[in-house]
Image (cartoon, rainbow, N blue to C red; front, side, top):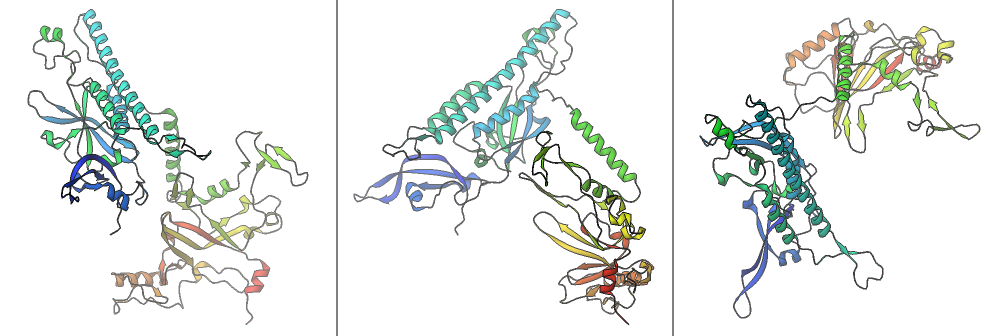
Length: 553
């Protein structure tokens, strides 16, 4: 079916007997490899020969199947088995580990050990015997134990990182091709032996693992309390498997904690002690200290205070449109943060000057004012839709505050020349990958003098009545334009009642345009967090537009 899946070679079997026959009638020995596919269980592993590679059934990694976009993530649990009852229990704080899918299992193991070391920092130790000298001796031994354990983990991490780096450099090694004539180096490293390097690493890691206070094991994510040794395996600190190929969402890592070293003196002095070690605890686990970053806490407090202030302001919570306009018109520094780097070229002398600022203000105002809200943010690393609600007025938007003091609007015009009323809104529903547009428009006519009539003077009288009624319950609600919509409103009678109430209301008539259907909505539903583009009309139109759009009786 021409479906390609990423995988890794997990086993090489040399001199395997093939079912084919040679000319002498004997079986032909061939080298086969076993390939394990990412996110599949081992039962789906496939066997391939060198002929499959030559025929193109096995291709280089990611040449036909795209790499995994998200990193490999798995959870790590803490587990302890009681030495008397032999019952295992989970305890402590579980945590997640993220690794690049192309990392080797050895490199991912170093990441697990680094995160596990956070639970080995010496915390508060319960007080020991009353004897001061014995207490000091006990504290000293505890510190040495934790220091020694951290040292072992540090050695293991350094060893894993060193071998992983050597493995990558060896696998990607380049040597000059003989008689290449100065051409670029070709991929060629015949002396590189990945199996030998990995086996050497596994041997050296095994010599240190028993010195850890826990075992690193892999189990299924839904049963971290394995009932038998067959349900889990030791974590493979190997270079021959990538963590994306070995781990999947169905796996988890368990730190099986061991008991600390026993203290013969403490056991002899107090034979009734539950734990015969100088820690007085079953394991060396110490909960990590929770610290709040001061800078982050200050930013969070300011944001909370600002949110409370906006919530307590008049109207619903959200950002006022006036604040957006003020930010748009504020003074901005050109260039970088350094004043010497902030250069501006004078249009007269054509010379660059340092410390340049710019400020955008309005000089003239149009009859139809369009405000485009920034709803999408994009950078080289991240894209997102801004869902902050902007509270914009339906009537009486005074633009004088954002006009230049010497502009004609402020100097020559009257008060209504810079007052606007909302006539339409374009809403965007969806996200960065797709969405849908819905428009809200106010249905109010203009008088012969170009002035907008009182909004309450037009409430839908004269328009087509909604087609939904008690007798026609199988037709979608609202005014219909063009083809019939596939979706059918199940509550036709309620829709008809709402449309009729809107037509008889004294409030302005706002219509919602959704594809070919138009329905009345209450004015309170116009201001939403989906508003994208706002259309305002000046309360007093210019004489040219009055003459252009007026008709003679």
